[in-house]
Length: 285
Image (tube, rainbow, N blue to C red; front, side):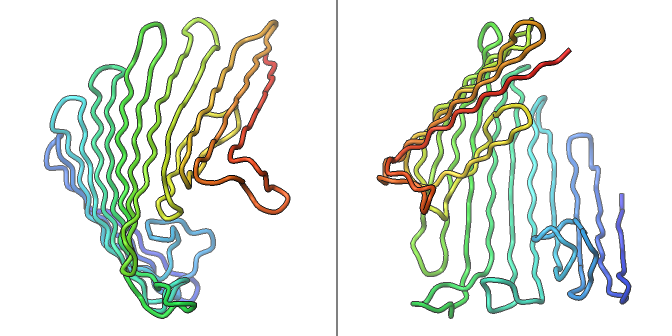
């Protein structure tokens, strides 16, 4: 199957996105996407496949596949190569780069799942030479995630997760970081009662920082970034109260083992830990 799209702005500058999808069998699908966005092309609020997310100043080629080798198992992967004719922030030459990734999802049983992902990112950046940015080099990032979810009795389930990051440029030694967490979940089938808890260890640098999703109160969103060495835990409990009331409470704490204070300016605290308490009360008919 072939599909594509071409657009022109008011000045006639083009933006092109073309793709080919190949259904070899119900078990294998391959696809190829080519893109070219003119350096002068302008479209307000454009969103498309590109390094920046906008349709401007980029040419690239993406090759991907999806394979289902066994029942409940899915393997996918992709390679994306791109370049831009324009100078960008933090680089004194036209940038180029590549990105590759692979994922394995295995539904072992109804609620038992194994999830493995790997991503490699390589791009050009100016490297620090004393106090000036003079040399252009290559930056490489690798991220590996292993996650398993398996059920327990009576509505309980657990999730074990391990994240590994590696960062390196042409002028420095590799830097590694990890995040290891254990989650515990409970959801009642008879009433709106649920519980989420996590205990995690992390050891990262700024270049190898790790972002993690955390369950939060209704209409709230939490994806903290972990930098340094420490312990993180949180507990979220939501339970029904009388006459249509629903109460929720979330308690979290981050304890650092590589520093004695946190924050700066008015937000500076002289202890290596931070505690957060959230309470929510809702009424519904």
